[in-house]
Image (tube, rainbow, N blue to C red; front, side, top):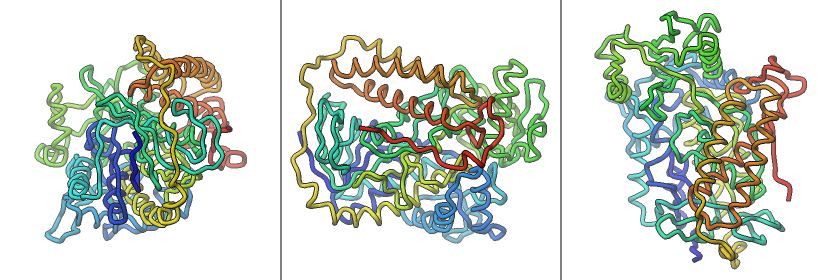
Length: 539
């Protein structure tokens, strides 16, 4: 079945929803989302959105902090554009219904927090559920639009490119680099449907589920990055995987993040003996950037053999803790940890992809008609390491820019993409009776990435990972050709693709910079590697 729409938005986090609300003024919008519309990385974001509102703050300070965190690889033009446009996008969120903590009666008298790497208080927040507040407000706006269709439980399989020869949705030959939609698996029917669109927006979030331990939900399998790469788009800087320093360590807790804001409000990191250790690594102590803190914790764990370190904020006023961190307090209590009196056991976990689909200042990729926004994209803002709470900011600013640019693109492409698309071809495929192959490879990839491509790397480990991922990909491709696609198979194929790209990127960078640390090249090398790592598929 072929469905037509003007703007196809794949993903339902802050970037995709923000874009959809605006694009709906100009045409029909279809939102594809893997599960329910509110299940996204955005909804799990606790800390807040970084933007300049404080009297002691300035654009130049925010830009300086962002560039310092990015360790030489931030694009100054992008940093300036995002930082200067941030406050207006947050005011827009308030007008759309988002409610943030305030210190006064004024509409924009925001309470401001501070997080690691920031030289001033500039984090706009809604207690410790900022992402959920934003997601709820945007979902309410989306549901009001008659021009927006929401398709839940739909999984994008592949992008459709103009003048392509297609076999089971896999691109074989590409004659013109124009995206005109996507093949999408309807989980309710098991059928793969063809969506024809003038403009396609990838807003699928990150790919940290490629690692065994992650703060991300199960949906974060790098779908947008993998699909864009297969369609011929450039991807960039995928070696820079941000490991959040403080995820809750408990056998019954899955993917629960202890916000950066806990350290920003005075939380102290302690080793297994109760000693505060961050001064051994940096004068910034707990307020250092995430890459520094994550490596410090990783080193402490290896040095002591302990299963976790501890984050302690119990020295602060009990009422303040409960007011500032109600969700973290309640969730930890479920596991028998009272953060008003007890230190919280924490470990690092894969959290954020600083690399992604390469875009310009408007979110446009090098495939015509295809945009990437949010964590799916590599815009040049984060460089080698993202500054805390700049992710939601980037998503808002780039969704707006992509909206403005894609409306023009839409006008220019309406007639060009009025073509007949090849339907999905399931010839000679059957229902799978070997689901164990999928689950086994899924587990192996995630363990492989954690052990060999983690916080600290070496060429030997990376080369071993590269050999193994090639074998796994061969197995997946054989399986893919023989059986009808399922959501599990789609996701497995995507994490394998992302794993390969992360490994290749890491092997190319013979230095240590930001989030990429290689024990064979412990120093930063500006002479040879002050550049982005770009990968593009050859057809």
